[in-house]
Amino acid sequence: MRRPCLALLAGATVAMTTGTMACKHETHDVRPSSEVSQAGSGVVLSTLFAGGVPSAIAGTLQTSQENAFAMNEGKRLFDAYNCSGCHAHGGGAIGPALMDAKWIYGSAPENVYDTIVEGRPNGMPSFRGKIPDFQVAQLVAYVRSMSGLAGGFWAPGRNDSMQVKPGENTVSTQAPVRAPGAPPP
Amino acid sequence: MMPASGYALAPAGPQAARLAHVFWVFFAVALVVYLVVVALLLLGVLRPGAAAVDEPARLRLVAVGGVLTAFTLIGLLVVSVRGGHELNPMRGAKDVLTVQVIGRQWWWELHYPGTAPDQEVVTANELHVPVGRPVLLQLVSRDVIHSFWVPELHGKRDLIPGHDSTTYIQADRPGVFRGQCAEFCGTQHAQMGFLVIAEPEDSFQRWLAVQRRPAPPQQELGAQARRGQQLFQRGTCVMCHRVAGTQAGATMGPDLTHVASRTTLAAGSLPNVREHLRRWVADAQSVKPGSHMPPTPLSATDQDDLVTYLEALR
Image (tube, rainbow over all chains, first blue to last red):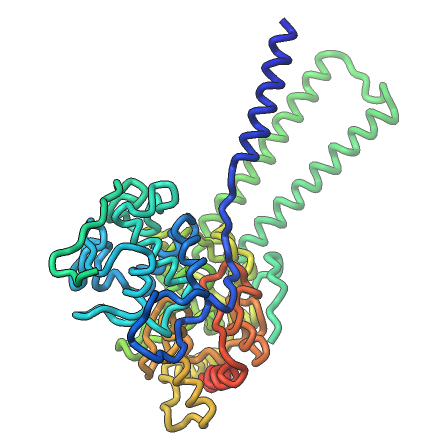
């Protein structure tokens, strides 16, 4: 009677220890470096870019795509910076919808970063100098989560204010397709 | 202008006075009960058998004790319920000043409505009230639940998103009272303070008149402040802050039209002096980690210009 109990206890201890070790805490960077706090305010020497994204921000742009805090901050900023003013809550109005599979200028994080920082023809303004780079990265992560490109694991589950649509974590992944009239890649 | 201690038993308003009264009645009664119980206990320990009585007498003693306890508790209930009923003596009062208080993570936005839209005063973290006049607070939250608490004036009142609530306060003597968010609301809950500045009616009206003015026009600024304004409007500041009378009109962060006239920065976290302003602008995360103010990396000259501009916003 006693031996199975002990074995069970030992088993549970081992399971809990390994379980805790396996649990990976995501990093929550509240004090971004001054490199990624720049708002892309450097002098633009040319309007032609080879890669687009400056190397200083590339790392942050990548890690923000798999980080729940970054994505939720992106969701907050999406309203704070009035992206909703044109894109509504992703449904599109003056600007194109963001919750569908269609992408005009590409769905990769680098493409979306460029869209925000450089602006795009027919209305999308350039936010160069206005939004710190690490926040642009957070916005990129959130915008991609709207069509399920971020994966349900990190995407926000609820809205802070009135529930106008289900949380982004319930959106099924929609394979990006090129919107009609998109420029050749 | 140092704020008072935030001591609820040094009331400066009618409601806090009633709360303090209820507290002292409860304290006095509890003290008497405590002393009686300890005295009887000591008697029992030191002189065992001193109160030895027969069975019927013991039952009588228990009954008397029970009745006394019931009467004490009912008396306290009456004091408590009456205190609660009298807590809003200003309900329906005339000549009420209305102020809208909006809880934000982690600061307080204050609106003093005017007769016309351009007469409205928007400020932050510093609630000016005239002495002896009831103030109706309309409490709103933009994000999570906060709680408005100025111990010298009133008890706590929650600000609940989607559910507007109101409360009255009144300061019976001039002074500076520290308020604090009293409902855990996130990382910087502890640094979500504010000041209530109670002053005589005429100096309150003077303050209100100054706050109604827009920011000084560009031609009245010095060369350095003018450069600072350009940095403000060209950079990230303009995305969140408003300076009335300029192109900056965002409402995500505190209104900065008269930021230099306020005594504290970052919701009561720092005294508002140049050094702190510079530190807050450059690296707010070193003061309030997790707050929504991003760092602003600028060269030393640019920083100087920007801070000079902010200091010109009196």
